[in-house]
Length: 340
Image (cartoon, rainbow, N blue to C red; front, top):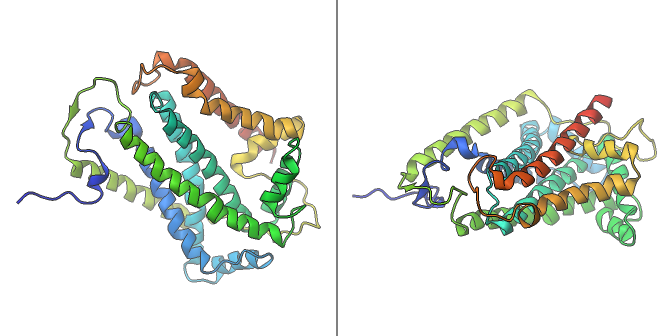
């Protein structure tokens, strides 16, 4: 009697490109990112049972989850580190796509991927705000003040995001809780499903045109993916046991701190704000860089030649532009981190 494929095997098409289906081509970054999002969803739901978004109870509930609820510290640590790791793996996944020409002929899915990276970053930031300690509250105060500088729509956007005319302990945490769960995490989940569907719709994983396909046993591929998933979960648990998620003193917006410290993924923007006007350093340059990345398959590399080929010549302009933006982000981040 023939063996029936299980659910996970049916996630893959029956025909796979020989070279591109190997771990050495994708490094499993897309699947690892998806797994980390699932971990975030599970741990996030568990955290909801003990979290209150209203300040100052939000800080107390985070402290209670960390120090009083059985294994609450592990749940919170896994949620925190999964969020940071997902941002890293999503960025590396996008880098792999650029360097291997995976965006060629897949313009819509590239835009979905860019939207996912933005959504992941904002979801991470809003999640950090919810703990409402001294560092994140003041970083929020500085960051949202930049939004106010946007000509014309700045004040309106500020009120939509913050929930009041200024960052406060009443409306702002509740507003960010709503943003975190319904305004960002839910759309990210929808975009992930759409992203996966588009991969299948566009012919599976990007590959060299005309490359020979083989009928590879899907069970074999699922075993490799299962091993990668177990390894990722083991590393996440080890990190969560070894390093606690940060939790500083409770926020007091009436008592200024020496310096508001941005989260690690916004250190580069904070460094720009040291030297440039808020509108230029906090809005125009970051948004301009994001638009440049989104336009890669529309402006900088419109050819379909070189798909699936690392550092392909037709995509050289796209690789240089994307690499320059990533290098600038890393350099600014390192400079800002060394100032701390």
